[in-house]
Each structure stands twice: as C-alpha cells, then as structure tokens.
Image 1 (cartoon, rainbow, N blue to C red):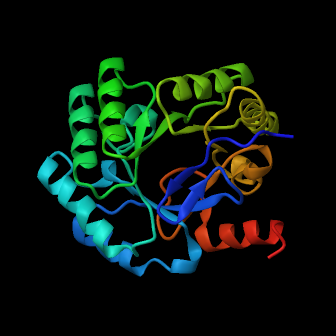
Image 2: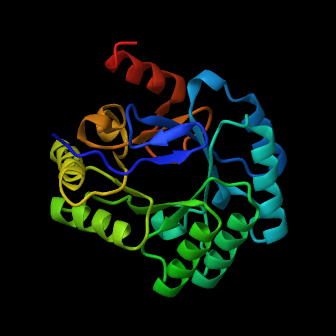
Length: 257
C-alpha cells in the first residue's frame, strides 16, 4: 500500500488526500483581464486557481504586480485557494528575470497576504531560494517547489532525485513536469511518481507528462501518486492541458460519481 503523505490544506482544498484537485491557470496580460477571467470562472469546473504573473505585462512594477494579485483574490470565491507563480523563461515561462528580482517579487507576493501557495522553482539560486522559502513559511504560505523540462523526460532516477531534493529544500508540495518523446517516457514519469510516493515521499506530489502524448497522466496521475492536475478555462499555460470541466468530469467518472 502506498503511504499517505502529510496532506496540505489550502482553504477548502486538501492536497494529498483523495481525488486530485483541478487547478485553472490565469494568464491575462492586465489586471483587468485577470479579474474578469477570475470572476467568470464556472465554479463547478475547478478547485484552485494559479495566477501566472510572468504573463502580466506590468510584472516589472512590483506595486502593480501585487495589486493584481490582491484584485484576483478579491474576485475569487472565499473558499478557492490561489497559487502565485512566476514561471521563468528557462522553465517554459514568458520572460526572463534575474535571480535577485525573482526573489524580491516572490517575497512581495507573500507579503500581500492574498496567496495561499507560492510556486518556487527548485533551480533558483540557492540563497534566493532559501530566503523565499523561509519568507513563505513565516507567513503561513505553502511552497510548491517545481521543476520543468520542456525538451525531454529525465531518467526515472533523476525525476525521483529532483522530487526528493525539493522536499529536502523545504517544499510543502513537490512538482515536476516533463515533455515525453515516446509512450515509454510517459511511463517513466508515472513510475517515478509512484516510486517517490511509495518511498522517500513525505509530502504531496504534482507530476505531469506534457503535450498530447502525456495527456493521460493528467487524468490517471492519482493512481501513481499525483495530487493535482491543471485544466484550462480559456488559454492553456502549458502543452497538453485539458479542459477543466472535462478533466473534472473524467476524474469524477473514475471515482464513480
């Protein structure tokens, strides 16, 4: 039997305990667009929202970036958790940022009091990463530590190693996404997830195989130990994301709803 990790509670959502949650990414370019999209989300299609700040045109202005986060939080129902993410260019995001500016931005997001979880890339400069993780935990904000490979799928041992390292670096939830080049790559990602969960994994894990070939991992990830899947309402933030309502319906079907 796969051991149960220590669940992470974000408002009404519990990660790592039961059916995977469905998270919708918001990728608007302006605060107004983000707020309009957040307010219009069909409540029965999702559990969490991820705000992708690397898409925000004004993200270089910290005051405007934090104002957008607060505005989105206000537009969402009170029970919906908000994950704040700045995805760097090297990890598949929209823009470059220096390590120092990345750290400053993430700490500013924590300081808004509007986010429930913060995405922190594991390959961030070590001193910056430590400072951000400490600031998040001091504020009661969960850390989702992440690694993305848009070119290929690492070997199984490397995937497990990264997840373990994220856990050791202070992640409350570990995350890895990789691009498959074959069906075997999808199986590698799923097998690595199961190995982490049945072995060294003490925290919930989010893993996915990207693109059309990896779409099955977004539906079947729970079987192997993944606690969350990303679904779209509008624009996708990564290759292979499925429609959120359809994804939630598929998960319900697997659970006999």
